Length: 637
Image (cartoon, rainbow, N blue to C red):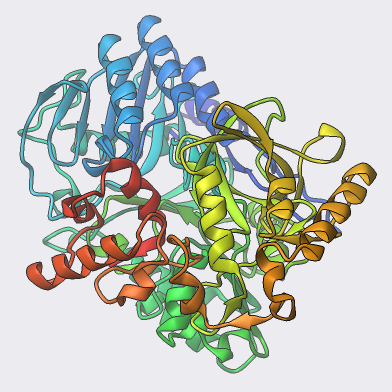
């Protein structure tokens, strides 16, 4: 607001403008997964097209688009940026060095698309991309940190303060970003837009159209941009940028979040987190605040990280975290739980204070506090907290198994690439580039190799090998009964599967039953004709002692996992495997890593003192870009 105190008439005019300005300032939250509404029936933008929120803003821009994004590969955004440029809009892009080439062809397509339109970009290594093959190479102080922001500033260049909008949240502009559980926050406020613009231009290195690597600053080299507290249409918000800089002149986000827990939490604390390091001050403050049962704690953590905390016997994975007033659960989402959301008193806001929402790109970790470029927003609002609460209840219900996560839509007439093969029971189709979704066989109960160390189903090894031979490098069609959408349960499709095999189209479900690698299953509704046929085929295999039926007494029995692993190719696990510590048998549970590759991985780490980055797997003979992309989600250091 612009304050004038010179004459009464100007003051009256200002107050009138102030009311209008507050009416024109707003905050809107969007979620891509289904929410669960309570009795208040709060309006929630759930099941939303999050990529479309930014695409629409870019298409509406008249003067400027400044995009600061960890990973940019979605063509809808690339094409929107090109359209803006062609309209005469100034377009500037800041991104992360590592993600320039993490998807190889997808990234090359993006940088060529933007470069051909005259849209150049800078990353946190100072490299300026004019296209995938035209790069001005610089070497900024990077220290392997991430430019992890996800924000855009729209029309801040405009002389009018009434069209400035900030887009931010947890959503990466990737194919998978739309299927990971995410949120988007849009803030229409000129002062907020100016703050984000100032943060952007530190990384851009100039206030003009051309970036200047010589003046670009990232990570610990950035200055504190102020102020931090704003009034947006009557709602108090706080905005902070990470990481801590070298002279400690920036406010500590960690300290502010701990302060909120200690001074504001009275009734309930809830969080949704991709990662939440159990040893950071914020985690310890939450654990302490909920120690005496006076404050209820509920949380959902992405299963990849939750399993790490559980295996390391850390607080979030402990028995105490699921006892009494605490309930911390691993997520059960369509793909990754990617939120970085903390709610304080959202369920029971205090009479004399507002509930609090914490969101943005800031993971609850030391890297976010001390190394990575991040932005975090704190919103003091019962209304917005109620929206985030409805989204939380959806995720919490899915984590408890009370609600099914939505499956991505598929076309029953489309041939999909086989993305990964877990074992004989389950494989993945590539529904989007880089996004494999599990498929299981309707009407066929296939033995499974479990990720744990205790036991697996008898005959799981041969079944896994058979499925791999049938599917690896091929395409499939999937459908449900009546050629409808396949049925979805337990985070997977249950489907009838057709596979292209040596010039033929084979029905996979029937082939497994006929060859004795599966038994008939009546789980989930099926077409009556299929039920009759599958029963006959399975009974015939049993009568002739084919496959699993050679040892009929062992059908349905558990055996040592390693017994079955030794009979089959690799099996994809459901939690990350540490490639610096895993033994050979465990490494063989990774997709595409058999006995030979497992030995090479162990030999490499012994010779080189371990892996410093996942990308070092490319140094293993036989591991290329495609295999690395399949390994990346299921390995850790």
